[in-house]
Image (tube, rainbow, N blue to C red; front, side, top):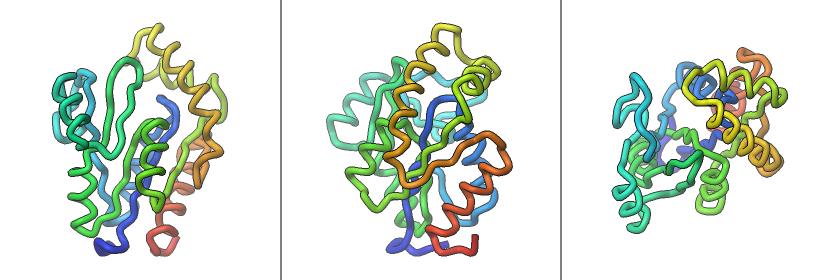
Length: 192
């Protein structure tokens, strides 16, 4: 656990289906004192998702009003929906002295980099595009059209991976989780 002055912001991004959520879940289990920022979105909840735990589910009007009021650290549109990190979420974690993990889209990561240049930026990449396609199909949450749209976006996102402090290729889940944990532990001064 760190104090509010030394707490870090970790930005973890990468294409949809790359395994960010799984890697972050393992990270939170293995590194004490980390908090996961809960993003806001205009997309409908998936089965089992709860407001305030998985996302802050907002209507289009609520999202626009909060965006116009400057409530977001970052926001992006992705696959027809809006996503964003509320400043209040980040402040809550940092004021508790907890380093915070943001699981966000590449557009949002670029905004955080500009607003918080001290953030630790980590890009999660697939070993190749065919693996990404299979992972998206295997989730069973998107139509074929939505998967194609996500893959088009992934191509653009992958082109920006060199802009990040760290690149973790998720070709082996255990190895990728260990690499991510090592990056975070080193940044917050814990033994890797």
